[in-house]
Length: 455
Image 1 (cartoon, rainbow, N blue to C red):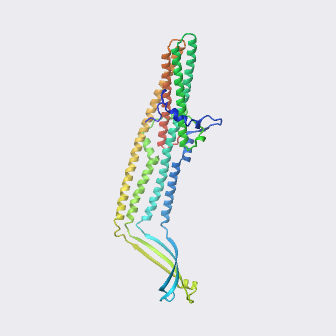
Image 2: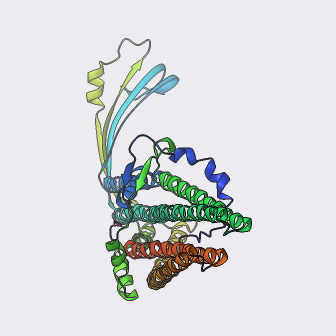
Image 3: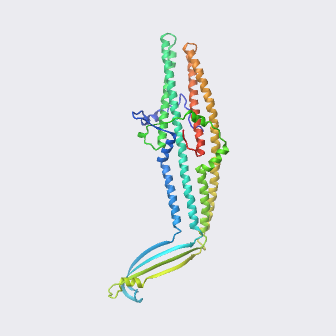
């Protein structure tokens, strides 16, 4: 699949309406335009993008889950109080006799408990949450990577359209000069009105090409600005074009297996799949842990205070608290016998989920192998196309120069001249497209190798 669309000299008329609505956002300004490199464009996107921020929040949630699972190992400590008001026959809290009375009873308690054994569920949940935290970090990197590739694609579209606009303007100048020359020859009696009409048509076509190229450049700038989350009224910037050194670097050859092996250790999609599989494996142990008995140690203390209405013999508060002060300690054993197959079903589901993540990990590896192989093949094809289009452009440029010289002295008619110029223009557009396609394909390889995208 080609990254850059093929801009014909007579196409893209539909872009006029769409681009006209947004061209004011990128019109010339008296203020100096900010210059943004591809590295800065990526950094701005990572800083401002909402999806990146949301993924960062998911990581923060996973971190909280890990902290909470660790805290679950600590003993619990709870305090409580209750107050009851009763009328009629009730137990006298002092004499422990049943009597008719209006009674107020307040109880206070403090209790603690700790699990001595629980099938290692909590230990395995800590392990699982630790892995899920790392998986969340890999998911964040995956989100960043996907957006980085979008920014790189959009950035190259801008520099391509910028070069295309420059070429279109140069072609317009040539067409206007030809029209001026045809008018001069018409006045000298060496040309006809048909020649003038044809020259005017060439100028009109060149003007349309400039308009289309300008619109395409405006749209590509807007797309890049949106990826960087820049407001349209602040999107007054220029991009840095690659150099000859960047093109020479892009012509480097790669081995598919070497790129794939290196990408396996760096590509966040693979790392995320591996961690999800590991977390699911621990999840099976967590599910199995609920099938084991649990043993807990519990302890506590408490006291109470009662007040009998219409009784002058109520004991003082401090005396009652001291007399009724009590403590307890005990062990609790719970053995799962039958719970509607809940535990067994959870184990089965955990195993199925684990197998699904094994398949997902293998699928990610297979996909990576395919895209790496395709990326290397695309780079080789782009390099070959760049070389051939460069030769074609140079040949068409030389041929046009010869035709132009002969045309100026009347040895070539206007039809042959216009044909040669059209061929030269098309060859230049093909060469520009091939140049940026080569650079883009090279950056895709850098992307899979985890290298910083710069030029």
